[in-house]
Image 1: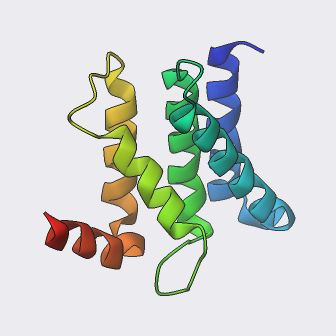
Image 2: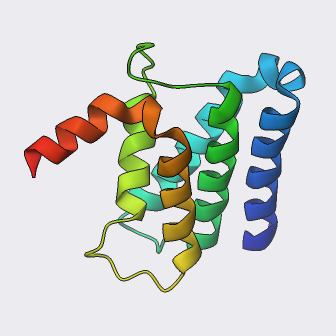
Length: 128
């Protein structure tokens, strides 16, 4: 499957989760696991180069997904730290990204859903 097609599929699934949450309700956990598994594979692999377009597609999908299926620290979600960690990794200023779409999408995710990451953002700020 081509990289561009993967990007589009991940984004489309997120849009469906945002616009038609009642349709995605039975599949919400599975979709989140797909996003996190793909991000983990792409961003932490030591053997192959990450596909930045696929990562951007997952981040876009997550941005849409989190509108109706929140994953906040206050709710005690076990996935919040992973979502935050991958979002932070994608905007790391020490990494030279040639695809600025990834930075833009990750910043949009933080702008739209910062309330879900309040405690993690505060802890991160305190550590620096």
